[in-house]
Length: 592
Ligand SMILES: Cc1cc2nc3c(=O)[nH]c(=O)nc-3n(C[C@H](O)[C@H](O)[C@H](O)COP(=O)(O)O)c2cc1C
Image 1 (cartoon, rainbow, N blue to C red):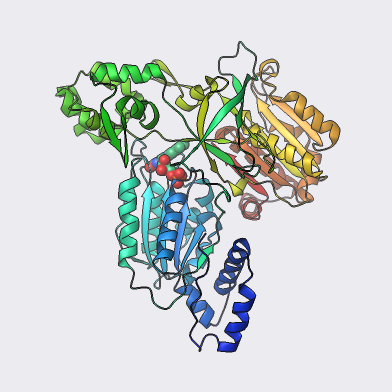
Image 2: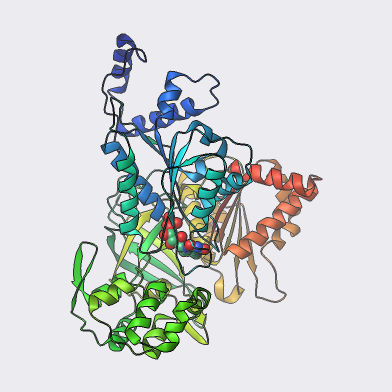
């Protein structure tokens, strides 16, 4: 992290003696202390300060780089941009949209905002409140704000880059000045996004005497690790266990991966990115259809590699993408394909229902060369998996809970690339991983009761929480409500929960097996045990929800309805109160 470089500030801001005094105090600070202090001072300067002071105006000259990110791409770009701005001598603060309030925009002068879109055209989880509040705001005057938006998305989705579009339009509608047209990037965003970053830096005036201050009001990057998406750790598989009944079609697997002690400083609630490889049979089928040589040399970014390795590790061989379809229409010289790509709606529909092999096998084509194929395919995206164990400094293993996943396109069932890759790994195999911090889902240090609600693989972070609670001797009440399909097949980690019940790390355990008869919804538990729910909520309980989005959202709605009924709240008041609970950190969601 870039620390303060400390030129002497102008005397009208700090008299020499006072500056010497401050300088003396700052000198012995460790990097983490300096970082904390910089965040504290920035927050003070931008807090409700009625008289614009010198400090506030200095803070106002700071460039604010805000990001909304779910799987880390936008966050990574935003961090790079901050580093570049600092290196060029500009004051730049980095902030997660999860931490930015719409009213704070009035205090900013330059905002560079980088956001992705998730769900079905929805904001990334952390940016939901900012996005909603911004779009609902009418009265805020943002005449003093200049902004630029970089939107990341995936053009195979109907609502491509929708969050970036919404935010860009809303900022302009509130009077902010757009310094550059929004850039919408597809999954192969790297080079165009880098150009956008560069353009922002080139627009800035020469950095003056101003100190370069790294202000981070966002989540810290996994400190103490050098591993990243670009430079992943190669971790050895130590154990692979099917936790579900052997007959289960979509079983759940427990994986244990080797770590060097201290190499992945992750907290309970964090995830790892997994760089999966495509199955050899799929790579072989693509090579077969294209009649290209497996060892032809290709280049991806700076890296030169064999076609077979590029197809195996770096290119998405399942989702075709618009680019491939356009190219294939030319290479195949097929009239039906040519007509299809002329109609944007038809093209999008076709992409949603077909696999790469549908295209390659059904429309014979002459691919010009290996590089052209690699350029037309989408990059293979990493997948995030929540860490299922507590990683203390001595821990040399990382655990994952993985459900084997299949999906259907047309009449054909296809294996999920990452989940099948992980479930098929054998002992001693190597897997590429990197840390992904998720402080929004960290186990709160507060002492109020906690209610953990999870479905399927949504249990993974709770296993990490309970290991941490047991190790630390946390004594606040903890209630785990876990859901899966069948009692006989899916009671994941049963003996461990039982052990924590006995030790007191866990106070109550309520398993719900939704597909056993009579069928039960996860939320039924709260109707059946309403007294406890209401009492815990009154005591300030923190609710965690993790796993399948639809299931957990229904469960949350049921709890909200019970809370509203018990407190005599009308719909509007209930919505307001629930929103306050969410922003107060009492409802934490990790949904997918
Ligand atoms: C589950 C899921 C849903 C997505 N939905 C959309 C979408 O509706 N529209 C879109 O343009 N991109 C969508 N994307 C693509 C992401 O915006 C894209 O991968 C982006 O690079 C992610 O950036 P992030 O890692 O900063 O969140 C989706 C991605 C995932 C994994």
